[in-house]
Length: 234
Image (cartoon, rainbow, N blue to C red; front, side, top):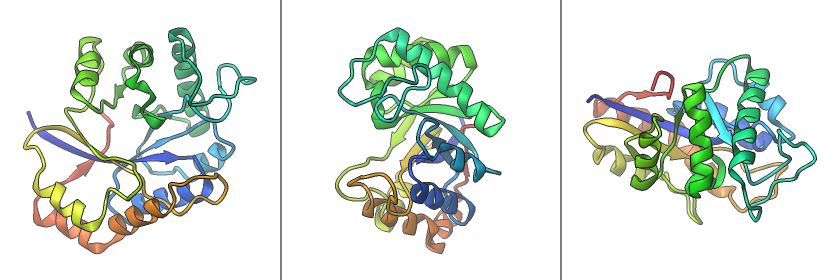
């Protein structure tokens, strides 16, 4: 098994300043992939800035209005049924294609809502239909996806907490400890501080953006003989 290393920035389309920072991290930095929220008020603007970027769907089941049921506002407190998630996943993938004129490279889920087995099973149904990989964040999720015939990553690294995960020091440490084979996804959240969305996750994005824009980030990859890729073809 060969090694495939993917550095994916979540939240493209979430907020204009976040989107701008992600695009910058990909065009001027080392970030190799992103995932897009298609049901925010700024999704269309994000799509206009997506030229040349490898982009998957950041399936959003916890914020903004539903695509399949436009009158329904989604929240983190809502109980998600299997059929709703199936319908919503299909609808968001279709909207992705309408906005960008191409299919998503893969699927991951905002706030990891697919940790819930009902949600994971529903996302897996659609992913299998569309031939798309889905992010797994732990071995149980990974095994469930593989058992359902859905491609997924073999390893997952990253977090979004009170402190920024991807500092320059962490970047170097993780690169030195990479598994020797398999699909390895590194989740990241670079961006500028949100300009329109109320969020406590702003300064952390700027730290990660600085980490991935620094020449040292690319030099670290070169010196270790590592290449980054996207989810396309996984």
